[in-house]
Length: 447
Image 1: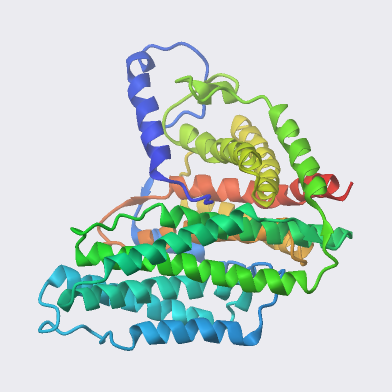
Image 2 (image 1 turned 120 degrees about the horizontal axis):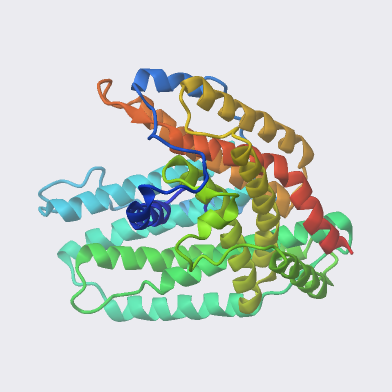
């Protein structure tokens, strides 16, 4: 689940622009947010946007793993990399593409290994993210290297794949929703459920990529072996975390509570009047008047598209029987819909237009940071809301990264930061909206 602007937005807006060209000339209807094209700046002008430091939020930790479980995962990584030289010599692997693949995977495994062991990475996240990533990359490097000189035993790998697929399916089908029947207990249980479902569903999608045949090349073979390793590592992580969690709670069945809360959330989303995205001019229906091409479309897309995504994710999660995922999407929907309304109001009031100066972009970013810091003070315990806060802060980091890349470009190449300005405006609204969004879902969970 990402809030990062993606190519699909650009493709959509390009299609809208192309479809609108024939009617743009001579149109006498009232227009909102006229756009003569983005203002462009030199990279040196862009750098001051990032002057104010960005806050960092620790992702919530609802379960503390045993101290030695990370070490066991690291031992597996070290065993896999023991025979992988750094770097791989040309005489060992003459093929440059294969050699580069091994080196890249070894480096990725080493980076993830370091992340798992070094603070401030919490052991909960390290076990779920860094260790599986390190094991996946290390296995891919080791299998690719060994397959250069010796034919791999595909039957053994296929059998391992079948077992991994069966195991992760069993874990998904056997999901239960238990926890302490208290306010904090319910909020914690919902977060555990969402994290567990997301990780296991990701592992299930990974085994769907299986493509090993007798004609598979060594690079693809390594990737598939890495996929199996990732699934095994994810299952290992959640077998341990589930045992730790079960030993720490009363084990009250919360499935009826979660199911009812998700049903109320879906009903509430269904009452929101949003245009059908199948219509070519659906963005125009979001505002009073005609929406011009360029920045106005980008801004409204950035603001409203996550609303549709969260609503659809809620519905899909209920159909799949994944209540934690659905409740996480419910908070996102409540947040994104409130944020969209704020952005739309600011746009219609003329407060958000194509930025004409760096100061406008910097001011919007700093307002987003202020809103983020206020939100951070409100969410200090493990919950879906604190997880959503961390995800929103991650989007802020991604947006800052794009600004930094612009600042690092060739000094003779002009850049536009209007897309980032749009994202900062949306982020500001999302941080402001999170408290009310969390309260809405919390009320449903605690009834």
